[in-house]
Image (tube, rainbow, N blue to C red; front, side, top):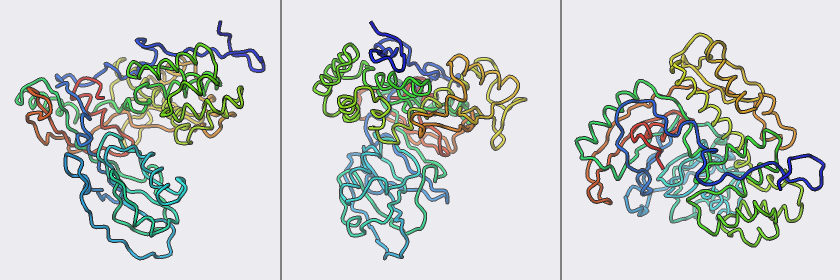
Length: 445
């Protein structure tokens, strides 16, 4: 029998409950909700890495082009490097192009190859893993010769430039996207017609939802872990992270998670959890040594991942506010009581210093907090204080720039189906999948 959480009770087990497959407890407010009325085309994105191309645009308006991986088979081109002489400045800026590789993995690999700490690397924004992407990064005081000699099948470095300024999160204007939707079960004319009808509506503005990738990939629990942390239920957060399963996971992983949920036996879990689950195993190994130190166990995760827990929960609440606003007929246009940013109405990324809207928009924001059982003060944490957030506001309407059809034709990888290539620009902090899902009328995975 699972007891409730009583701090100081040596026999307690927290009141967490692992989410079971097939339930809707982790369902996002955006799922199954579409703003535009035009018929979608269905289909699938990211069947291949080259189906999702992302080019970062710097604050100065320079586009990071795709040069090393411009062939659909992923063959790597030889690209001219042009290494400038050192100037005495500490930061080396580079264009990083990557093929089907997670950015954090890319940084770890570069750090090992250059004999550097990963903390020396800076970047403006995360980029999709299953994609071909190009962006600017910085490296503080690198061994220049090791940078020049660095090679990797899936990474390319070029356009070196010395600077005094590290590239920090948010140091970009936005991104250009070129996304291929495949396996569309419509003919080319109908596909083009439906997409054009969707585009006509999207250009008027759509809800600026956070995409599902914000919530943790296959299991989509990152925000739920964040909620438990904010509620002070650190053990529940850790156990949810370790034991929650998803239908897509393999049986070995599911069995290991379910066994740990049932037994709380960390020694056994250290043997049964697959080695590829290195974050889970790091937590488990810590708990084998220090069985009650759940806060310390979370500290075994990289800082960027720990911070994502509360950020994801803020994003979940934002999505919920925006959906409620639309469903209650308030729409996306500014209303009395709204807080505006560049003339556009906003919704909160809640934090302990958040300013809430007035009038009907503010009522919705308060209702969402009440339903979640969360207060603004909960975003200021004593334990795991680095996960605290002051909060800010985000525009609730999204209008992509230069949204257009690049190509409609036969899907060469699926007989009898059509593909469509769609291009557009988004300013920073906005999700391409938010646009594509309105065209597909399904969750793009």
